[in-house]
Length: 340
Ligand code: GLY
Image (cartoon, rainbow, N blue to C red; front, side, top):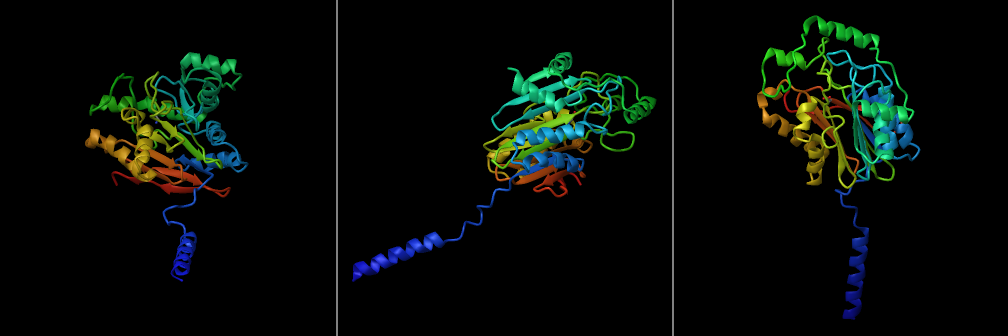
């Protein structure tokens, strides 16, 4: 009798365990999903989504997104972007997949799709990083679409306006410098008051649960000829660890390089921080270097983890990012910022 009673108790316990609702913390993985820097990411996400919607790979989706923006006129990405202070448009881009494969190009001119060139460095060479004339030569060898070096009419107009006020004063390092000349050499804002860098970073998690990312830019407008920012540097402008998450940045590249920004965001996620917390802690690292200087710098990070959770954070207000989880128009979020 006692034995029978115990058996019933045991069976009841099994039933109870098997009927236990799912732990609330185990949320459904949000995939596929694509996120991009700024509100210009809305159309970028559309292009990327077309790939993801057909069970495409994240790496193909982010490249499609980057190609979209590289083919438009905007201040800060592609051959129609604003030039350096000598009147040359020089482009930087990098790309990274879910298997630690990565490719970068920097200081390259006349290449219509630098993100695809970075992909070719990744897929078709034993190297990670090609720059300048070598990168351009490789683009020609790989039959990449090339443009002439003429500035777009809008970029020419911006450049003419900049030339009216600015003098050529090489300042190799603006760190901790408050001098007017150094600010002129690397202006924080365009003539129209907008920040002069709207780098496009795109991160995607595909249906298979794999992450990839891309980062592409014409760099800071009116920069010194030869200057390269964070965008083509794996670990600075972009980092993807398929075990953990991915991150990318936009803003003053010098500040991102000195703390290996995107890699730092991913490492914070590895240690359990949410994407937004990880971006915030990384921004804090920049701010702590020089809190006074940070008040006039814009840097923003966006991040995604393996669960498809996303987040962003910036030093100054008004850093936005675009998020798509289906084929409808991307949702634009304004990231929280260190200073308000
Ligand atoms: N983040 C883009 C650049 O500094 O060039």
